Image (cartoon, rainbow, N blue to C red; front, side):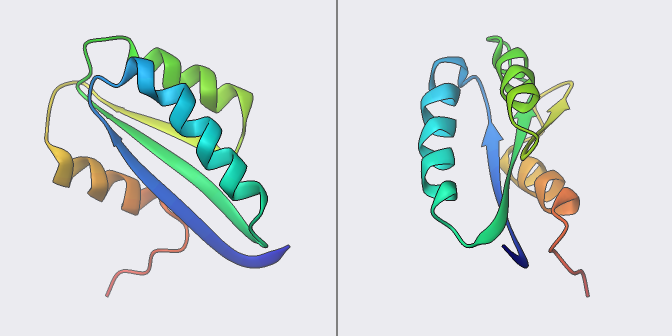
Amino acid sequence: MSETRISVVVPVRDEHDNLAPLLAELLEVRSGLQRACEVILVADGCRDGSPEVMDELAAFDPRIRAFHFDRHYGQSATLLCGLRHAPGVRWL
């Protein structure tokens, strides 16, 4: 497997029912890649149990990482959080 790493950042806001199907599709696509790949999930003040689902999915697969905001900060903040935790991002 190549050293090149792909990070998929997913902002999450009350997506409890959609997380498992989304991750199943991402895992399927990721299995065909010839590069290291991870999924970074960032919960944006969820109120529906999404953080618990994210933690379960991350416990199942070490290539999934979950981060949680204690309140709603918005999509820009969640994307920035994910990018800051993506190992391949280089800031100028």
